[in-house]
Length: 451
Image 1: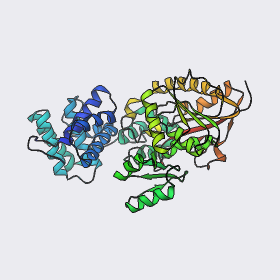
Image 2: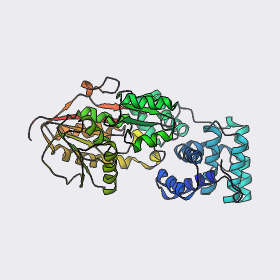
Image 3: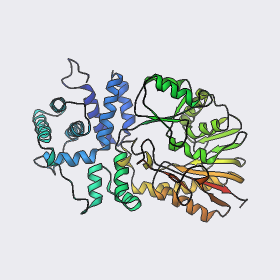
Image 4: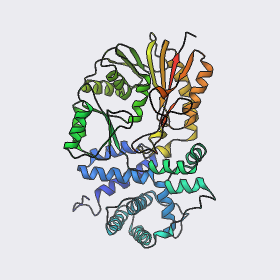
């Protein structure tokens, strides 16, 4: 990695250490901190990729890393200074969760960080701990899953106990382990071809010409997934040919099934993924009212639509619960949620979201779906969606809504998708244990009459 004569340590690893400390102390979003550091340092593209790998990997796996580190400390219960803790986490992540960095380089660079940012005594400790871990990796042991499956899975895959306990109740052991493991894999890139400017076949040809390995969408053929990075993606985004979006996030729009000439409402629209996809499905004919309370995010939405040649999306700055208008043919409510379906893409989500957040968001989601229902014309369709896998934010919101609103009926998603993602109740449910798919939920509700 990058080194200079002025620095006795690798600046990229030094930046990673500082970011880990800042994220730990201030509970700031890791991606935001990384962007700040990139602006302050002259890192090239390779350095930035390495920085992101170190930070996101060390944050995502911090429970596992701390578990392993303790087996090589003389006083494992003693709380470590935050910088020393960050240096050891980075060292163990590189040793056991990367495969292209020589062990000697990992030890040397970790010792350099400790010597520069802590002191010589702690540098010797780092050296001894890492070398011992290399010599005796078998010293790391985990509690027997038969004795305590929650602790075993939480320690091994690095998740909070409450989420693992929920998954074991919902999915049983093998499915839970598969889901937890998949969300620890490096994030992938998913995007869709923008039909207004490029056909999927044209995008596929460009990817092949650039020798980019990709997989077409599992359910939507205009989508593409890849684990490679390439400057071509930025160019195609700037040209409006593609839009970065997870395939699971587009499923609710297919379920909404908007037609050309319709009046469509996106009640929580920014940054515009669902609104713009609805406009494309409508062949740029009709109206998509895109409501959001954030002016900066609405500005991004408008810029994205302009890039893609979309002309029927109308940004509306308003509070979701206070917005009023004549009823719409179609309403999409992509409700705020804990985001647990995207925990593999957001390294710090698992340490930030709590059961209390789930309870609070359930109340917000219930209020928002009640508001959305008032904006649907008789015979119209309301689709409720989230990017979480928790029943409290998904199934329970819909079932409680149907008890309150007898003028709405649930229509099965089976008309649009196969049994592999449609539940017995008729909901769309995707899970991150499937490669290139995030967790999501969607329900299609039809308004039968005026209440």
